[in-house]
Length: 472
Image (tube, rainbow, N blue to C red; front, side, top):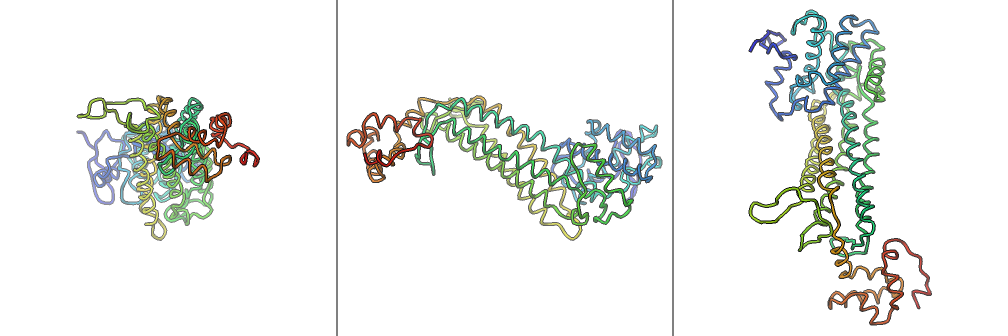
């Protein structure tokens, strides 16, 4: 392997001559072999880092703090990276000591070496354009890294929201398809009152759709960033106009409504927006897991469980039991949700661990937020295409369970009274006779009245009734 020699405050190191990163990145790679997940695993973070550096270069140039020829090379390099070039050179593990310094320097070094190439120089010839002096000008890790993180989360939220919306549409489509399938609703795992399978699936769609709005609201809080605060929020080593100008450029470059935080010292140490966003992801994961639980219950059997729906078979379910097919897609969704919920706890603990003017645990926060979004997006897509779209209703099974249930007695309470209804329910439970049969045998209602009251039209929505009819 051909190498080049680079130097930092700790001394010299040989770097692969083909690497676009430099000595500080290599030290971080050697130090932090933790998750095996590099920055490049999350392309939105790489893009966001490039956009922050581009905005800084533009602001510094306008303010006379950066030579225009260097600025042009830096901006061009950032544009290349934003467009997907050299993402594989962002090699530092997401979890790292140093409050994100290694991530920031990975970006600075790759951008510097790419800019050097554009200026006609070789990698590592930092006397012509330096990762710290030029690419990192007017910045600290402590404002560049969290600002990039805020932007990256927003960029990652966009495809997640679209994936969730697609899943919602699939659930709504099943709601329409199953709108005529009458079944028993259940509370506390016991028979309750009738509903349609369509109502059940439409409720799934509605509960997930609520969190699209919550994700949007949480994303807005991430638009307020501390770029320009540098080390602790005081803005040391920056021009008085730099912060506002750099954030304006970042908003223009990213298409996101980024604004400077009202108090940069507070914003440099506060992790509140990340905690709130993580909470929304946890809320969504909990809802998604509940739906997966219900799908597993409703499809249980196939002959000794609920068996009201049939999930599309994805793979053989056992190495010993012939014919067994398991609900593997909902099971994987459950496990994804558990990981997201656990990640939220990690975010919470890391946010609490901040001390004085900085939170050194930001890398853990950023890793967990980006990873949770990536996992949830994959899980939603998998659930939609490999499960929801192929679900079938077992109409005969739904009708069978409906006929055998005593839950329909609730629909008769306003007409025969709670006492009669309770007594009929007990008799039905102990004798196996149907509610319909017992009500007719005791002449509590006529056959026509009973037919009307136990029809889907009467049981599945509010119905007006008169006192005279109840006493009749």
